[in-house]
Every structure is written in C-alpha cells, then in structure tokens.
Length: 226
Ligand SMILES: [Fe+2]
Image (cartoon, rainbow, N blue to C red; front, side, top):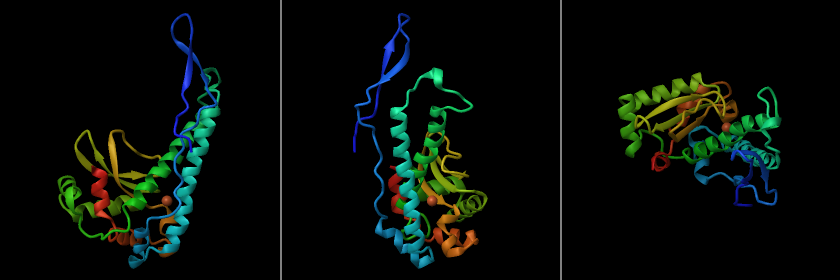
C-alpha cells in the first residue's frame, strides 16, 4: 500500500496562474486500510440481542466502503482534472467526488460505530458524562434525544463535539454523508440502517435502540474526545 498522495504539478502561464495539472502517474495513491475483522468486544452485544451474525454481515459492508474509497481515490488519481472537461450536470470529476464523500464517510462512520459498541453501556462516564449533562441536562434526557433522533433518521445518529460552541449534539444522518457540520469531532456513531438490526429485531428499531444504549463503550467515546 502506497503512502504518498498524488500531487499535481501545476504548469504556469505567463500570467503566473496555474491552468493545468500534469500528474505524475508514477506516484502511489494513498489508500485506506480495509478492515479485516471486527474487534472481539463487538460480539459481546449478543447479551442484549444484537447478534454475531448481524455484525459479521455488517463487516462486509464496512469493507465495501473502504474498497470503494480506494477505488475512487485511484480513479481520481488517474483522472485528467482539466477544468474544461468538468461539468456541474455530469462529469467524471463530479461523479467521483460526490460519491467519494459517501464512500469515505461510510468508512469513518463505521470506524466509530464498531469502536464504540461492545462496552458496559449504562450511564455515561468520564468527560462525556459532563458534556452530556451540560448539553442535555441529564443522561436520561440525552438517551431520550438519541433514541428519538434514531427513530427519525434514515441512516445514522452522530453524537459529535462542536469545537465552535464547546458542546456535544446528537445530529441526524439520512445517509453516510448527511448531515455533518464542519469543525466537529465525531465521538459516537449509531447506525440505524436496517442492516444494523433487522436480522435481530425485524422492523422494531426501538428495541435495537434500547439494546444499543446498553452496550456503548464509554471508554472508547472518551478516548475520541481526546
Ligand atoms: Fe452500517
């Protein structure tokens, strides 16, 4: 796996502005690691009804996001990034970059999901407990908001730390790449796509959410706060 990113070498006109990038195609494209397996702690969620089979199938999707991230990076590296060929209706660079955010966010979201599941659950501990209290008044109120957001979302709930306001918020996500806000740190990612629970709870998403809050790894959440 190469480590160096592809860097365009700009040509310079008489005006001094770079107009075209001539890529050195011999340079390696920086690729992400494709996850090979799940952390063993993840499977402890069987105690609340989120099965090993669900996680094993979920791993395949996680791997898919990593592979597609790499595929797009390679295609972008090979692309002739000529502004004259780019088009907002359809163009190769538009298609690749729009779906790049879906693929790479899909990888990152699942990195956080599988890092922060498989813990003791229960009331939050450490710094995140303080942040939850500051933002929501109590742990119970935060859980209620988390579950309601989870029922209202089509894909994710993202608990993120807002560096602008120095507080956390439960964001709603309809897809891998909606609706993040800049200058946040993602500390907890709750997958509410059907693939995360249908095998175990059928359409009863609320039961999955009840189970989920019993297996949050608060140590991992606190580690993400830094
Ligand atoms: Fe997922």
